[in-house]
Picture (tube, one colour):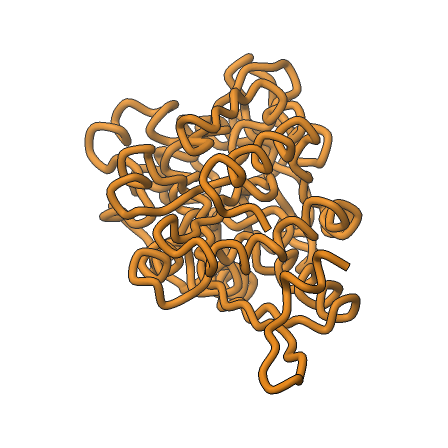
Length: 331
């Protein structure tokens, strides 16, 4: 009963359904849509979420044009404080490398740090490049140009991908760096995970990075990626969980944590989390958003797992609830 009272407004004796607005990460869009649908079905309250990319989500949260923003590239504790925001993780996922090479169909390719870096630096330009062939000795790679696809919008998927590249490729770190948007050395841009997925699907020879669920939903092949232990690891719920288990979530640092290039024999190296940004200086508005996220933490895990996302561990959820209370935004 308490939750219903918090989540409604009363005018002249009429109880109105709550409407929450959010925007940002395309990475989290499939599960956010599912959560919003189930939440509405159960409570009658609406969550309108715009899949505009993490850069847009950060901007809209800072400008207070939405009740919450969602980003896969966490803000530093200093940025969170400067913009009078609060930040907490909501779900874990991963970037995957997908490709469209008709000659090999759905064959799973091995790619290591150097291969991905050199492709995105514009140094490896053909699928039958000797280095790629060396990584995949049992696959006959074609003499076909590589069509490099990247995000054109500000994107947390890009943040995760370029953060990983900056850790594993010194040249990338020096010349390009990481962020929600970067100056790409080569390739064509497409908007959103949806845009990159569609561009790769229609481009023979295409390669791109997308959120794991988009590749699964579109039945795209995804590469095994070499991790820091030297093992080629295929993305899966298990291998993404392996990457997440070493994370050190700290509420005093607004949960700032990076899951790329984590240790572990079976850890998938391009993992990440989606973070929610809410206004610290507008506690009633923040509480309104957190009514929804409290429901997500209590009832949303099964929907996340159905869509191949990794729910936040119970101990992290407990920390988030404590964090809300400490900052006066607990619903």
